[in-house]
Image 1 (spheres, rainbow, N blue to C red):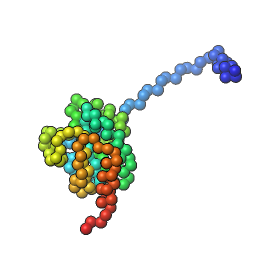
Image 2 (cartoon, one colour):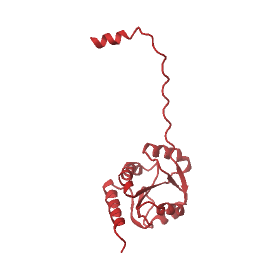
Image 3 (cartoon, rainbow, N blue to C red):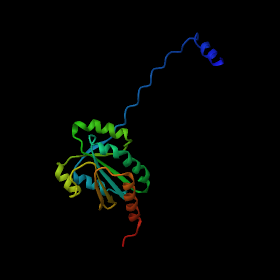
Image 4 (spheres, rainbow, N blue to C red):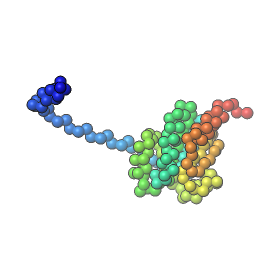
Length: 175
């Protein structure tokens, strides 16, 4: 009853000027930079990373979209230990706005790359075993040596095991 009286008591009070509705914050701008295979090789070996997880994906690829939260989780969990996540979109130019939206929804706040090479030279340059199916995931050591390749969606536990093994190997003294 006291609540009802309190609500009714406010009915006759003059209303204060309505506050304008807050405008929704714009979606963060995700930077997508065109890159050739040669430029991507330089990204893989750029200083600072002990291990590089490279993922080739597209917005229209359902397994890519399903796998993405795991990639971002792994980045958060292993970034401080030396993991760099490199994302390469194979979307076409007209799909870049959709790619930016998707990346923003996934919390990507780092530079992402857009494949520029023709399909087969790009595919063959990354790994001759790759059929071109998406997603494709490659793991490199800090010197850019490929440690592992997988085509198709990869389970979180598989990626975690591979990353942990690579980080351990990176910690061991060279023979």
